[in-house]
Image (cartoon, rainbow, N blue to C red; front, side, top):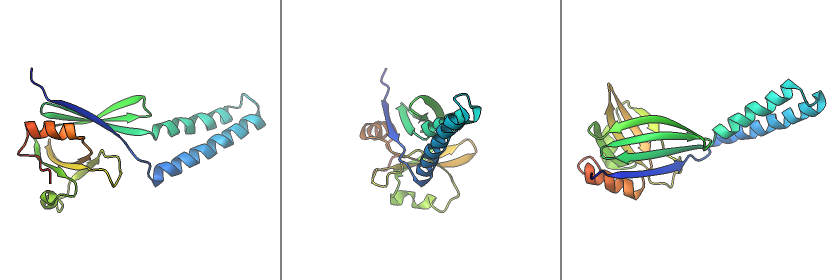
Length: 165
């Protein structure tokens, strides 16, 4: 059995929206604690005011995991370091091209109306790749950040579809 296997994970960086939600959650939790002290220890409103933002706060911690096995690439989303959700599986038979995101090889696809799936960390300094894939009846543009081992495995299996410059 000669399977190619590589996996990696990236943590999504905080943007302004998630930072705002975290600050707002902390303020609402502080208000909930205040309600507990004013309304007594059994105040339902105080308990809910603490629990709901605390739950939302943990859901803002997002990681993306990529797993390449032979000719398939899976994308999973890990929420709060506890819940895993499978998002997408692509088969490289359906891939048109995979190239660095800023590559000239992707310029012909920039004018097309594609559905964009961004599974990258959001870090502008990280080296991200873009995959153009025909998935069922639509074309997708997938942005992700593979590690070197994953790029080598993809190149070994699908060298004509991978552009590295």
